[in-house]
Length: 380
Image (tube, rainbow, N blue to C red; front, top):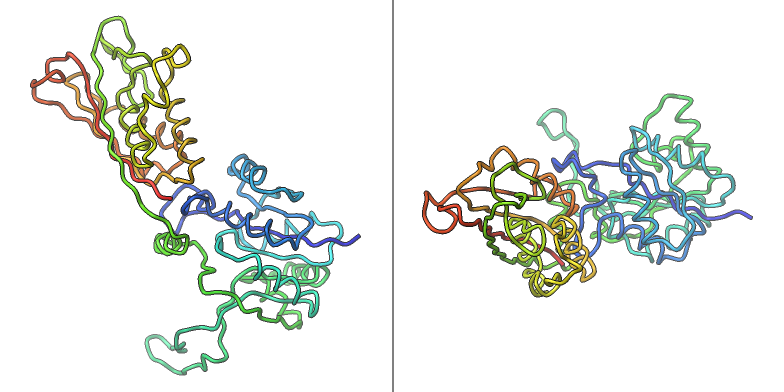
């Protein structure tokens, strides 16, 4: 029996955002970009199977997201180095289908009813795509000279999903491959073999997350609010304890004394995160019981991240300052930032760690102890 497939493309990157992390996993409000797209496809009720196209080094995170968000059967397919090749890889995995919908996962605000309208129109006509009428006046230019003004009543901004009969879309891709033609979307490939594509009215907030400006607009669409919290912690330095700061063991004659590993820097960050979410402090969540005796604070930081995620909060930024006289912390700062960012699931550029001394003043200056302060920004 023929089935209806949804192909969600998640093999892009954050290059135009200046991010190493795949934009699919950036959080907007309570969900990531990919989670929002998968939720819309799940809720549409139009599909019997989802194909999720991933980047090779994002496979594990993509699969974890799919397992968490989808009740529908799904298949993971590795993408190509161009969008067209990614879709072609997905089509090769399909044995029998009547309708295939292709969607850019970065268009995470697509509404389920628009998806269904596109599927319905494709069943009637063979090809349909979501789109909105352009709001701008479009000019044709030669260099910097305007040559022609186009009639904007006839212009449409095409979005996704783009939905087709499977045999039609497969034929369009095979023709493009045979001719060495590289298009920008499936509509172009289908138009190229002479089949018309119907436009289905979409919505202007079905934006594609491509730039930092898109993230800001997406946060507005999601109704996201920004919250800030502060954290502070201090521990005594004693002999016979390892010095653990930012998840790193640093060679020193003394270490910090505490019930856990006494990582004063991570404790301040955890308090800032919990404070921003109005969820109390680390003593409330990780009390001085046997369960947390000598606990690894990186693991506690991961638990803090999970607590915030369960409440629908996304971590935006961390800025932390460590105060102690010795040893010198600067050589370890980048590794600290890396471990913190990996544990929190955010880009390293969103984590700031600084170190300072008190010029010999106070308990930090005399080497009696160390302290840390942190500011955390979250969204939800």
